[in-house]
Picture 1: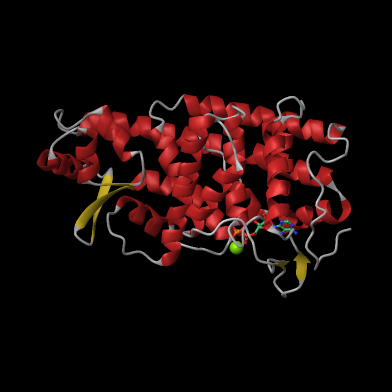
Picture 2 (picture 1 turned 30 degrees about the vertical axis):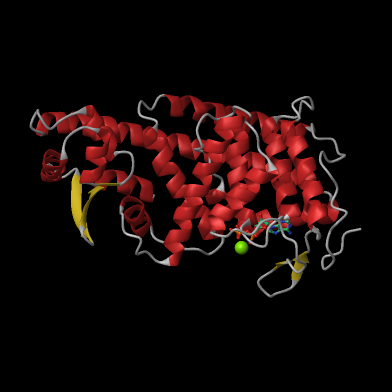
Length: 360
Ligand SMILES: Nc1ncnc2c1ncn2[C@@H]1O[C@H](COP(=O)(O)OP(=O)(O)OP(=O)(O)O)[C@@H](O)[C@H]1O
Ligand SMILES: [Mg+2]
């Protein structure tokens, strides 16, 4: 029996004992699959994949942290990401930690193809900058803004681990023939309902979502992020989670998640196309305007990897030595593609148009 203020130790294991292939769910699943497949295809057409894997996850780190009221500005974040200085406010640092957690999760998954409890703990630790693990003391509750208790997750480390084990088995069960996108909705609910940590469960769960899609080969790179959709439909998100727990209303939850995949895939594909077009335009423009010894495709690719560049980045790619690299960036500033700015002892160069594009 579920009671809001009692640990929900009887949280049912996965899979739920309901009909998953209703007409409405299947319809939403087909559309979500179609949009996601398109996104996967479009991402492949970007010649330099690092353009996608540094900017988009950084943007997601910001939005996902915003759900938890950790706010920074794009500008501060991009600047902190490029700079060597450690002198940033705690919120910006936390957003950067989220990005690292995502990255670490992605690399671990690449190594062994598995999404395990240990990996979830690693991700959580990285996000929260802690060495704590699974909750082992009582008292974690989900409350509304008035402080009323809405949900009390299972208590007792063993019970939490058992439920996570079941989640792990479900994740890796490829015999159940459930559509991976429908499974992602089930996994996300279950992870949040288990709520294994004292904090950071939402953010860890959102990272698991994208890693799961990669694990299932629905995506090659971590570029689909649902945080913006969740921010825009936040009350609905909470209400639907509650409705699964209280009334076993899985269908509206699953459809919500499928719609979020569809809408976000479309928006992300659109953004990638815009980045690609801007890159190509900038390539042509700089070929025309830059001195020929300065122009190279590698240099242009570099300034599209993230909004801020600096001499050190150019040197690291092997394009030029320090002094020449500095000259190159200045030339790009002369033709107004970059704009310099002094941050502490460093000079950072902002890719103005890319920055604008990422803003909206
Ligand atoms: N009634 C509920 N049942 C289960 N899970 C819930 C419920 N309400 C909210 N959640 C989940 O709990 C998350 C918040 O938990 P927590 O504060 O540990 O995570 P966070 O990452 O710090 O926060 P946030 O998700 O707000 O960024 C929400 O994002 C949501 O996924
Ligand atoms: Mg929190």
